[in-house]
Amino acid sequence: MKMKLLILAALLGLSSAQFDPHMKHGKTSIVHLFEWRWADIAAECERYLAPNGYGGVQISPPAESIVVYPWHPWWQRYQPISYNLCSRSGNEDELRDMITRCNNVGARNCRLLDLLDLALEKDYVRGKVAGYMNKLIDMGVAGFRVDAAKHMWPEDLNAVYRRLNNLNTKWFSSGSRPFIYQEVINLGGETISVSEYTGIGRVTEFKYSTKLGVVMRKWDGEKLSYLSNWGEGWGMMPSDKALVFVDNHDNQRGHGAGGEFILTFWDARLYKMAVGLMLAHPYGVTRVMSSYRWDRNIVNGQDENDWIGPPSYDDGTTKPVTINPDSSCGDGWVCEHRWRQIRNMVIFRNLVNGEPLSNWWDNGSNQVAFGRGSRGFIVINNDDWTLDVTLNTGLPGGTYCDVISGQKEGSSCTGKQVQVGGDGRATFNISNSEEDPFIAIHADSKL
Image (cartoon, rainbow, N blue to C red; front, top):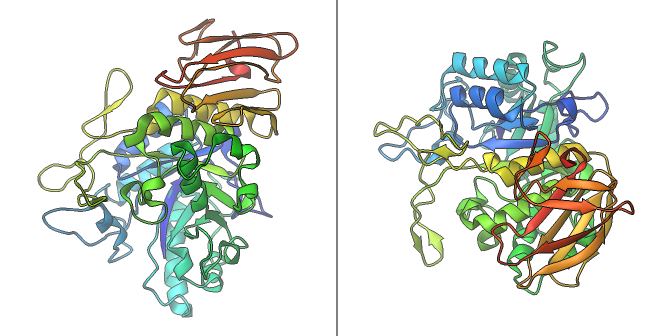
């Protein structure tokens, strides 16, 4: 069993503690800073994640692992050899410092632990695993991602979960329990069902990323207009059990589930639309991916370089994440979570949290729009022609700044402006040739 340390902004409740992250200050999304060093994560929590509405951080496994010379592939992190907290992301002191600094600004921490090859049916082994997890909990970790959970009996996993300490009261309310989400890959028709695991923690909903990729690519006759019942209506698990994502570190490399259907940063235009839709829609707890580039070598549809590790020096040491003057990342780090469109939709999701999906509209093809109560509204054009329509947004009358093409800065807008009438209606015009053919407005983008 593998678990990822999540710096989740989570004040966990007592009754559904393993399911509901209860992120601090109304925050709603996790970001996976894949293969980042602890020092860089600490700095990112303080300078960017907390100020821009991110509620949690999933980090790479902190335990000592095998080292594969001379290539240092990314997957060596997922082959632990001890519970010592030393990895190419840093040592135990650096890990502890990162957890403390991220918690201090309200961005909680979740980590991955590899237990797949352990005899979890044995009480001694359960005790050793729980002891390792409890050390991390006492350091301030808020939860765990359980990798390859479908290969372990739910009863064995739950026996470990029951031994876990409450969260550290320095940052969490008394009695708070660790947030658990488990990787169970099931696209349907498999022997092991996600329902066997939803009783003990949230579960990663792989159907979400696969089916959304198919819809956005317009393959197999799928259309955006079919998403009016997105979520449970598409055969997915209940929303309060699901953790969702457009891509993760495995399927963006063709591993796991989804294959060529999966959208990634390599498909930037469609990817931004897909992430925008995910963050606007109320289904599940959302996780944003933050990646690094590598030199792909596609042979017969497969990337022969899918093993390449993070940007590194010649000795295999991971390079720091470089932040450019325009807030993008350099040195091979992609940092999708810093893309304006994604960052602003994370804020959108926070602002509409708890509001129902409302005012659905579609053109029967690949132009859709929907609102979240009276707090936000999104319009997407994935057709091959211009969208030009007047819609009921549900928002109060006024002038709003589109947070996709720009953002509100003081009393001005750096992007498009949308005029909403006193009846809540607004006219939207989105060319299919635009760089980002979607618009989003919300209560805090009103000028």
